[in-house]
Length: 97
Image (tube, rainbow, N blue to C red):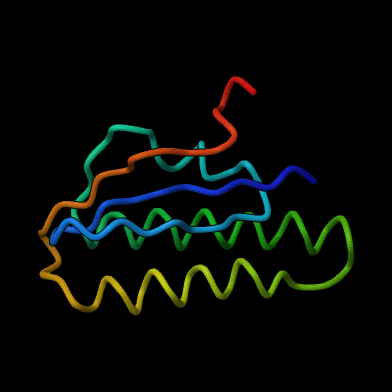
């Protein structure tokens, strides 16, 4: 199963690299796009749930990495107002890869 990383810039300029066990994040986020914190958390939570479902279907067990990514994003997001802007800086591999 292909995996990926995506890098985001939080409202204070701090950049964070996040992991996904699936390329499904491309269905929820776009490089260069800006999302408010609440929307970003909702989108990444759905993406990680779908990634977890894919791992579970393929291997028969939950993906702890997807759960960890969700927890880390929620923990970081709690520091900012819900309407503050987050920018998606990069995704690797690109969607076309």
